[in-house]
Image 1 (cartoon, helix red, strand yellow):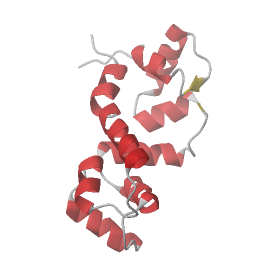
Image 2 (cartoon, one colour):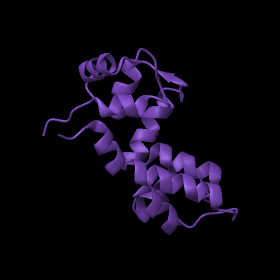
Image 3 (cartoon, one colour):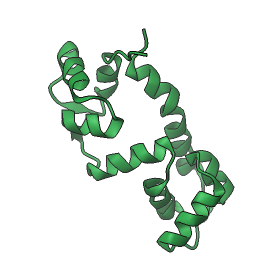
Length: 135
């Protein structure tokens, strides 16, 4: 029996951890397209196209997040949906449903099982562990 937490840990967590580590340890003022391509799972052509379309000349900490906001990979789309919800400190059931693309009724059911009334970064994994995926 697989849960959304299993799916999240397999599909999003490794990328998010790699991005976090990269941004915390990178000291250069600009980043290479190849490195950003690998981190965000985007082609170099897509990054170049986004840079041109948005008017970005160099990849740095600020433009990295802009590329992430508009990129087409799953982790970029997740980030973009989170930004659209304005990076809340607590999430409504609707927020979680939208950001993670989980049916609303499954969020409600999982929250009831886990006795969660307010979803935060501290308890969202507990919520995810109560969402059973049907294959």
